[in-house]
Image 1: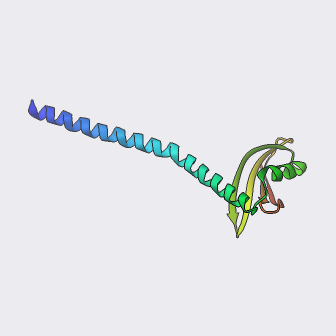
Image 2: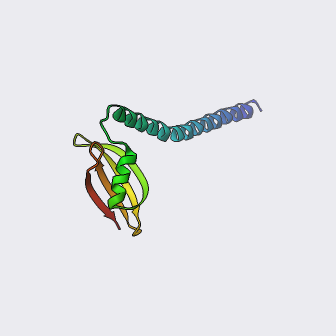
Image 3: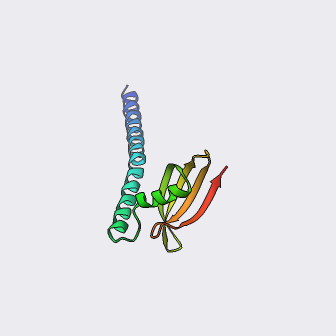
Length: 115
């Protein structure tokens, strides 16, 4: 009986450790995107406070004139020393386009149509 009880306790400890590991892993997955988002927001605030980039609202107004539609996604990136917004738009023509816009001056650098 003692051996059986010892095995049950060992099994219980292993299962508890596995459950705790899965719980920590799940928590890490849910927190990682939030911290990344917070980092992005901090970066945007920093660049805006030094007037290094235009306000996103102003850029969107300019983009909307040429490509009316709905903004699906936007990311702030750095490419070749330039700060750019990569925007995914669903046009009024129901076509999804990815635009790269210079975040400093609002110039549209490229437009890719997704099929």
